[in-house]
Image (tube, rainbow, N blue to C red; front, side, top):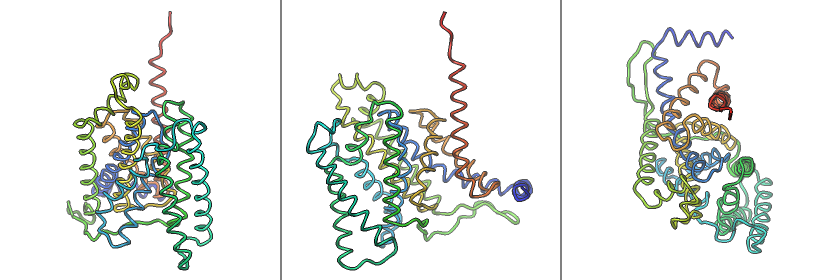
Length: 373
């Protein structure tokens, strides 16, 4: 308790600390808003509550981290993660899998093969363990198994064809359970491939001093500023796409009324597949930015999913300014909470905020209810 009061007194005695915390929160909150906007798209267009949202973010971060380890420039990880996660999210729409798996023998066969390959590759990775150097034969088996798994996964329609296409327009718990299982699977795969240690990309940029202070000033790491700029560019690009392209207009029409859109000749199946793929790509880009300004770990995805749900629930579907404002506010509140209570409570703040937002929403809905006479 004394430590908490000491942290509060520091905020009072040195006002510059407040400015630094707010600035850091706004910079990381802009990335939170980017991932939340992808969730708002999937939720609003497909009525799918994607609990694997954070895992796509972490997956994009690992793509950027791995490419940087191979010698690529860190900024190249953003477009690479965008494209990779778009493919993983279902860029290939249901070439084999349809809504009814039992009615398609090819789909059942593909699922059986995928399950077998997953078991073999997972068993091999579990035996070798992260960080250990496999022999030449083991390395060939690892690369070949991963390649075969990815090829079969894409041939079966990716995440969209396997899972998402069968939970569209279903009840709430169906989509929650399906995407929760997907989140667990993705987290465990990333843990096997990359290990459980936290990772980040160290950018070769210095901190820009914005305000001088005695003894504490206000500075902004150039890496975080670059992350904010990249997030803004991507957000503007998505908004332009939604308003100025035929696919963007089809997505908006499907979100308003899917049945009317089908009557007007819009292929809603392709719209759904593209929307989920776009969401995955946005999450991948957000993860590539996060790994440059923060840290990633295979099991950090749940916190990013909770953040996205808090932001979308507070802002509402289709409200881009609200999503941006809620994302920035959440970032600032988390930074204040971690400063006062400690870094260990930072993730708990997002959970408490989700409960608070849900309670407020429930109270508002109850007030709107009227008795029929």
